[in-house]
Length: 252
Image (cartoon, rainbow, N blue to C red; front, top):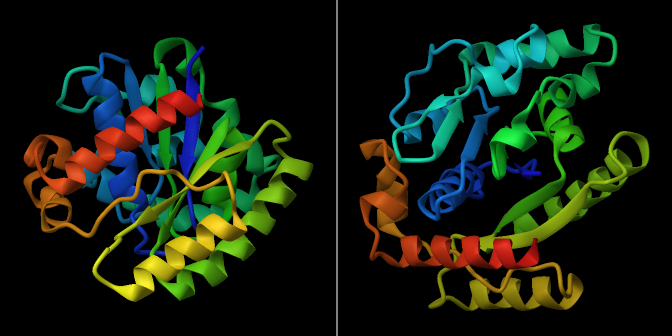
């Protein structure tokens, strides 16, 4: 049976999409059938793999219609990598979903044979704790939480972990935190070092050993429609994401 991961944090700009795209790419490169589901109306994960913003069926159709996630999957380019694209229509899902009975479990009910087809499924969540993110967290087995190496990100993290606790109690008791991932790390600054130290002290055992550095190659790779692991495979960012993929596999 495959594992479904949500990549989530209510704060924007912390590297959720970059992490989802590159972890999916690494898993696929390792020979695993891998699915990436773009749940962000900005469609950044879709465009990062060279896809358009008006592809159908999309994750919006899965959330609000009768389309299963498995049937919406399409080849994403690299071998073994599949994509359920996002749609700009997702911006309206926050209004539409609460009107649907049992809306919090729509995505979970529409996963279909995802766990049989794909060894790993990554859900790229929008930067909010609205109905779409709640659906992702309710459908997932595990959650990866990217945290930017700055103090404001720490403040939002506490609130996010409280929300995870609520979702565990009310909707998904099996949900586990795979780990907190430090992103956009600049080892030359005292600030980044202090944030890392504080995270590892207060969330002992929860923080991935792998740290994702600030990298021009990581930032530019979406403009080529490629993961950084393919765009610049020897770059610091690509090396870090491959190490993260191995660590994630070791954590189970």
